[in-house]
Length: 305
Image 1 (cartoon, rainbow, N blue to C red):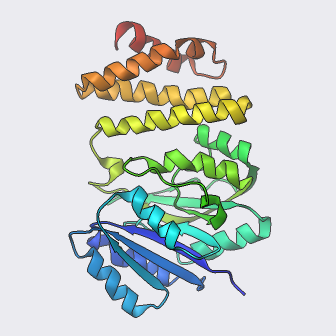
Image 2 (cartoon, one colour):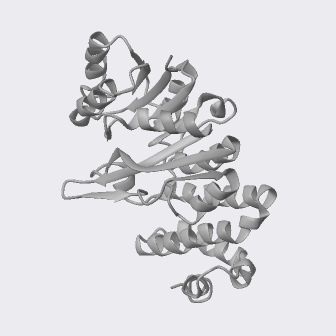
Image 3 (spheres, rainbow, N blue to C red):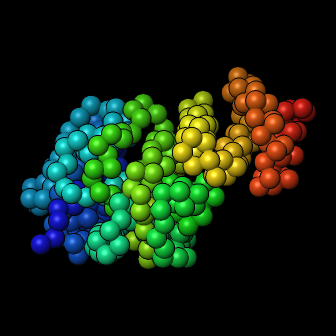
């Protein structure tokens, strides 16, 4: 018998996209689903759309809550779920109709804690295949290395299936952005064995107004804080990946230093410049870091450019 899979969909003001998203979930070739729609205090018709679908499909559970953000919404979905496995779908994205079946079959075949698939990144103008080059199986260290190198795996929690127990002591950080970055490496560590299928099953929609396209603010500093957490974690548990984790952090420090300077966010720029100065010795001694990355860091530290 097919195991129950919980599909968690955080919903907030996406009434234009929501029907398409839900339709591709209820029509999955894998049928034994618990579909949890968590309405995060939507002020458009999203909540009504959720309720309409609930009346049409008995597998759908709708939770209406006050607006608290994506992390709190996903956490509630996990808490309420009873499936042996979990899949996350963002409510403005949609799925190939066999995505969940393909992920589940690969997970069972290879006895993994997580299985991921390729994605189709699209906007109004075009579609691009991403992370669709290879099928592979990796242990935790190898997968974290791939994440640090941005090689054949994406950081988002979507386009993956998880054994539910991975979330027993791991939660999304409430009130923060870039929440996937905060926990994905922990999930890879806990999973022990992870597989990836090159078949693209998840349509990731890049749209105006989404977090990914929003103007940079102080909140974006969470990317730096999370990457520092990753560096500290790697140094303790996977010391062979220390230099990769340093590069992962320093590249973002360089990028956001220049963005904040251009945006005239002086305090944020000063904070990142001080962080770069703190890591100066590591930058100089890192044997794997590109010379161009080192030069960018040193120019910011000494010249402010």
